[in-house]
Structures are given as C-alpha cells and as structure tokens.
Image (cartoon, rainbow, N blue to C red):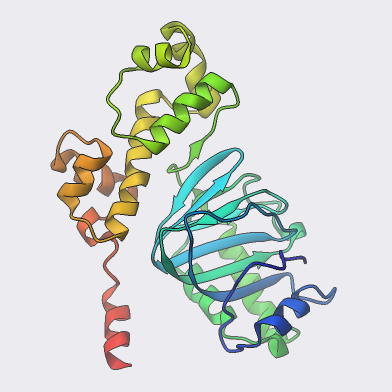
Length: 282
C-alpha cells in the first residue's frame, strides 16, 4: 500500500508521524489503515494521487475534493471516496476534524471507480474511529483484522450520494459548468448561457444531460447547495447564504437543503449533543 509522502495525517495514539509514514510503505502493512484527521486546509493545494483508495469523514469543518472529472464538497455526516491512482486535490476553507481510511487497491473493486460522496451505514464511523486508536503495533493482530473485515462489510453497503458535480469534457459545456460552480447565483437562462459559451440553445439542450448526467436546472441547484456549505461553515446566517448562492427565498433554500442533507442548514454544522457533552467534560 502506498501513500503520497506529503499527505499530512494526524495518527491517533501515536505522534511519531514520520515513522508511521515509513511503516505504511512497507509490504506487510495492513490492507485497511485508519487515522484521525486534524489539519488546516488551504484554498489552494497540490494535485496528487496514491495507490491506496482513501475515505474521508468529517466531524467538523468542510473540505472540497477537486478532480479532473468533477468536484464535490465533503461535509460532516457523509463519506468522501477517492479511488486508487485518481488525481485529486483537497482544499479548504479552514480547519477540519474527523478521520480518514486508506483501503488497499485490491479491496477497492466493489467501490465506485470515480471520486464520489457516499451515504454509509451509521456504524462505519465508530468502526473507523476504533481502528484509528490502534497503533501499528496492533496491525498484525487477529482483533485488528476482524475489525477491518467488519469495516469493509459495512463500507460495501454504502450508496452514492447525488451531490457530486461532474465536469463535461466538451470545452464550451465545461465553460458553463465552471461558471455555475464559481457563481451559482448567476441568473442567466439556459439559452443565454448557451449563447455566452458559443453554443446554440438546441445544442446545449441536446448534449448537457448526457455529458453530466443531470439537467441544467438540477446542476445549478446542486452547485448552489454545495456552495452554500462554505458560507454555513464560515458562520454566516441561513438568510445570508440563501441569497448569496441564488435561491429565490429562504424557505426554498431550507427545503432543498433538508431534502439533500436530511437536516436544516441552521443545524447542519452544529456538533451533535454527545460531542458537545464530551468537550464540556474534558
């Protein structure tokens, strides 16, 4: 199993990060390795790849995963998946706290072959957290292998979450996609966007859905929802965020957000009660 040597992970239970990175490169490293994740994400970072597949799940913060084929925001409660050897960049806007799991190439076959958000069984997170507490001294133990088997069984039950924005290959369609990602509040209609990009409205209508797998209207809404996560994570009010990303009303934004994430935007980044109690106790 190979990990990019400059990936910065905080390994729970063992602060000797340099030593751990070296052990990850050894042939006898386990097929599944979990680690606590605590880092400050920048808005710009390098694109890289590694031989292991990688999962991310956040307790706090927000990360955005950029790849040549698309983009998704990885918020709390959903698991981001990056397949082996897939080019990607992980960017901010700020501090994140959670866990990450490396999965050997041979075990990644049942999982999607492209970066995507996953809706996973609720038991997956505590399993990952438990694995992350076990130092390399436990990697060869029967208990560690049993936990890995259960983790993989649960992981393979995950389903793709629809909040991913594919990037079309055709340059003019790509130009429109990037505009909608960067400025989802843009109010131009489909025909207006087509003419802006040098396409006929008919060509846009005929080729857009087949290129990205969803309608232009849906693409715009997903872009608005993903963009809104940045504002919420930064502490902006629900009303501010709704207007900034282009929703017609606060109520329509709340409805769309609840449908996508199963929570209202005002409560989404609020730590669970058990986490808050644990912090108070500490």
